[in-house]
Image (cartoon, rainbow, N blue to C red; front, side):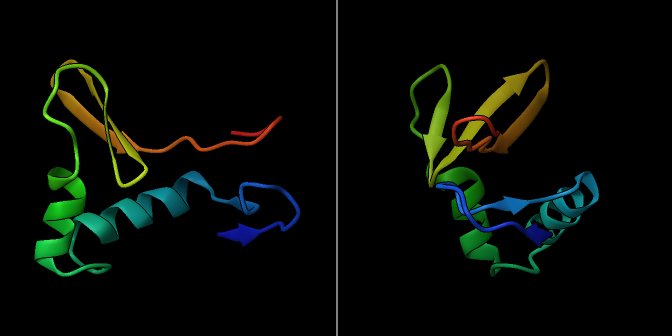
Length: 78
């Protein structure tokens, strides 16, 4: 991950490879212990139908697949 300071979102940029490694480390319990990983991935989302938000993450379902993330963004970037 490279940092490019100077915008309101913090300036972090990541490649697809960086994001894949991060997701694998998160799901594999290398970033948080098992209890906190479960809480972040499942325990913070509102139970109502439709888009769900928790810990600045958004849950979205596409067919049978579940996606969790945050596009973030500032003017001109995402």
